[in-house]
Structures are given as structure tokens and as C-alpha cells.
Image (cartoon, rainbow, N blue to C red):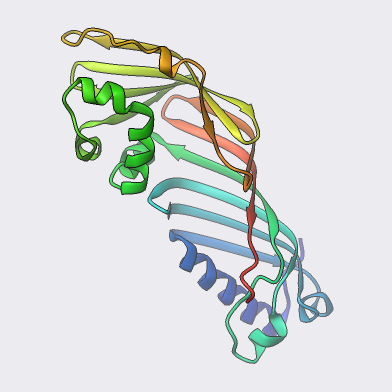
Length: 226
């Protein structure tokens, strides 16, 4: 992929980085823009590659992410004159994402993430006399081959299989309860529990291994132009 030349690259790259930082907190960001001067001045970016680390998006912590977009329509002629970056048409972005065990646990401080977990686990959490506020301080995630392990109390653990059913749906399965003090609840509600991701996301692969989750797929970014 060629690098955008001259002032065009110097204007466009900072504008895209600024826009990305407005969407998420990013510790490290590398950006490569491909295209000729004629293409870019016409407002089309043939290809953009992004490598980011230490991302926090809507409370969800991600370890690293690689993104690739093509044929992106932007308002470059206006940006050269000092206007803000605008995405003129919605695009699909190819993505590779990695989440570490620590990312899952750090995300529990987010109210949005707490509510998502609570929606799934509320019945079992309440049986233990615990509240949604205690999720952030008490629940811990552990990642092992093909399974999520949720340490609910020091001696109580719920483990779940997680599978990709189709590009927009994840499914929990094969729940297992281990506890020295708490009797096993009825876990049938977690067998084949479907998690809908929405039409903006399309996952091609999901792999859970010791300490991490790796995903590939794509997502939709809406136009920002008025």
C-alpha cells in the first residue's frame, strides 16, 4: 500500500487520528493511508490501515485492534481549507481484535458492561444475595480454552462455553457450576443463551484460548456528514 504524498497526507492523517480519538480512548495508534494525490483530492481514500493498542470504546477495554478500510469517501477538499473531518458515506471496516483476560475484568468498571453482564446473570447473582454494583468489585473473568470462567465469589465459579452461531449471534452453552458453599442453581437458562450483536457487526471467527479472545470480522461505520 503506497503512502499518501505531501501536504495531503499531512492534513488527512492528523484529521483521521483526531476523529478516531474522539470515538475511543486509544493509547497507541498507527495509521497508514494509501492513494494518489488525484484520488485523495477527489475525496476518496483507496485504503486505510490502522493498528491500535490500549483501546477503550464505550467502556469496553480492548488490548489491540487492526482495521482495514477501502474506498472511503471524505471531505478532503474542505479539510485542506481547515474544516473538520467528515465521513461522507457509511463504510464496512475489516477488523482483527484481541481481548485479554485483564481487559474483561477492567471493563467491569463500566456501567454499560455491568448491565450487559447483569442481564445474563441476574437470576444467579441474586440467588447469592449480590447486587449489580458488586459486579465491578467481586466478579472476575478467567479465559481458558473455549470457555469463559466467571469467579463469582472466592469459592464459587460459573464456566460457560461461547460459540459463534452466525456472524451476528453468539451462543452460551454447556454451563458448569463449581462451589464448595453454594448449591448449584438451575442453569438451564444459560444453555443455548443467544447474544444478538446487531446488524452493524459481522464476526467471521472467535477463538478463546488461555488468557485471551481473538476475533476477526467487520463492522459498519455510519457517515458523519450532516
